Length: 84
Image (cartoon, rainbow, N blue to C red):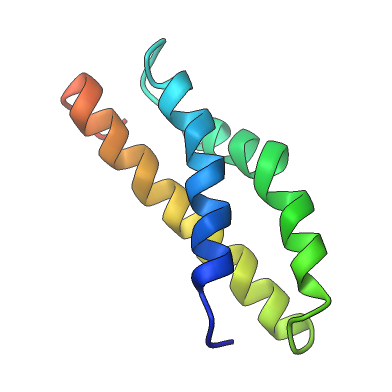
């Protein structure tokens, strides 16, 4: 798997959910999962046809979740002054 531009776009769009949610309370792992399920999951299924096998699909899923976790930590720090 070489082209992360599609995955980065998915992360960016899924992060919009987190940007809205962080205003109410610090983000949790459950919020990251929710953002993934609401936005990223379907799009990942759509592009998984272009991925080379199950290993690439798992790698793509893990990459998106990792990036969403990083974004949640950043948003919590910016908004609440703490990571969680």
